[in-house]
Amino acid sequence: MKTFRQRQLPFGNGGIRSIMFLYFTITAAAASIFIGLSLYTRMSGQVSETVMEENQILIDQVNRSVENYLKTVMKLSDSLYYSIIKNADLSDPSVGERFNLLYENNMDQTDSIALFSADGELLESVPALRVRNNLDVTREAWFSYTLDRTENQHFFLPQVQQIFESSSDQYRWVIPMTRVVEITKGTDTVQGILLIHLNYTGLKLLLDGVTLGNEGYIYLIDGNGEIIYHPRAQLIDSGLEHENNRAVSEYRDGIYQETFHGEERVITVKSVGYTGWKLIGVAPRQTVSLNSLKTQLLVVFVAAFILFLMSLVNSYISSRITTPIRKLELSVNEIEKGNLNAKVDAEGSYEIRHLGQSVQNMAKQIQVLMADIVSEHEKKRKQEFDTLQSQINPHFLYNTLDIIVWMIENEKPDQAVKAVTALARFFRISLSRGKSIITVKDELEHVRNYLMIQHMRFKNRFSYTIEAEDEVLELASLKLMLQPLVENAIYHGMEFMDGDGEIFISAWKEGEDLYLKVSDNGLGMTEEQVARLFSDTPHTGSSRGSGIGVKNVNERIRLYFGSEYGLSIESEPDEGTVVTIHLPAVAYSEIRQKEEHDKT
Image (cartoon, rainbow, N blue to C red):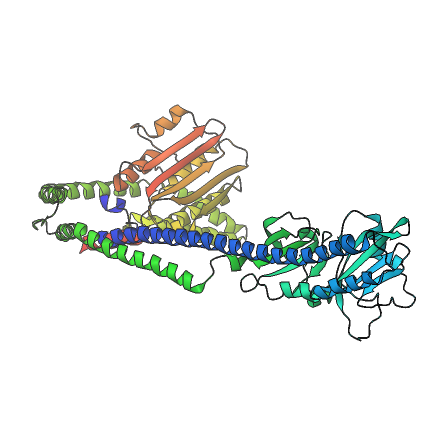
């Protein structure tokens, strides 16, 4: 019947205007989101590039300041060596005066200047200094390191000045810078070491207060990764914070991204000339990306505004398209209600007007044919099911009652009660108050009761399994479909088996279709035997079964639901048989409402 093959719209009872508007709006929303994300990504990329460029420029400026600071001290070292020390008599009082003059001109960068012989003797110092008692400068790390590397000037890590005695009780942080010099003694030339203590405060002032964004900072390390300056040096020394300085020391000049202690950071590396030091800029990843709340709100507003405009356009377009269709739908509703004489009002495009005229003509044809078709269809269906009901063979009932009597006589009342209950349920569903359509749940219950009885009769010569998805239990099923198929599996498929028979029944839904399957591991059939089951040859059935044939079941399904539905059989000799029932997936409640409506 055509009524049962109707398909539900994807949006239920939603109108075409609503569907079009929804589709258009979804498309507009997707476009708006895409535009918003593209805009945000582009702006974020530009902001990131700008911030990193600004950070790079700032670090370059700081690096130049540090290099200029160190270059000034290195020029002082060259002036001391080449203008005063080399080829000069250190006993000449003018040497000390010239030392003092250069020191006074560079006091902002220099804490002290000292000249030592290779034996550690203090030859000259400014301001006037004296080596601490019991201190052997030759044991200092910078002393031996400098003598081993005579060709360069050397910078060392910041340290507290502890070589010279001081009238001040304060500790002064200095950065030692050394070089090997040649000292003239008479006609001989010996090596010495020029030591310049850089004022650490001067270097610190160059780096203090320099930040990269809101949370970024810079720090200075030597070639081994040792920290020379860090804005959080005290926290790092106390172990409260950590820095990735060892790993960063391996980086070449450039910009890198790293994850340190779970935080994504952008690292900028710049080498300080003459020293092997490296200036490191650290900026959290979020500070170089577009994370401003105002910017994010702007992007959201732009996307929402585009969505709003497109929704207005969509509403107008869908209204222009669907208004004529809506009018046509109202006219068709009148015909659907039974008023076949209703006038079809069709406006708009040629296609809609032509469709309206076709609906009008169809209504006239329906009026002519409907009475005959309905009458003939109902007559066939009633005759078919009356024939089905009359075909039930009493042998099944007699054999079942014999088993019940035997159980009672052998004092097995529990099994007898179970058999009587199954038989009662079997016939209750078989009759079903004259209804031809029942739920899948009842049809499975019917065949379950039948199998329970047969299982008792045949003394466990076979086992059975019934499985069904929950979503199919309340769908409509034709009554007495499974029982004849199971009957054939028992009486014909397993007739000559010595046990270990298996019957499997399942029900499932695929899209808009319902499937029920009966499979067994019996003797199977040839292709000719399968074809004979669907032929017009009269099928008398088994004297032990119900007498309802496979062809009968197939024709009843096609008569009720349409020619595209019915049975299909797959079988091979000695391999078993699989019978599949194909029905439309229609809710049982819909059919009941239709039957009630037809009665009224």
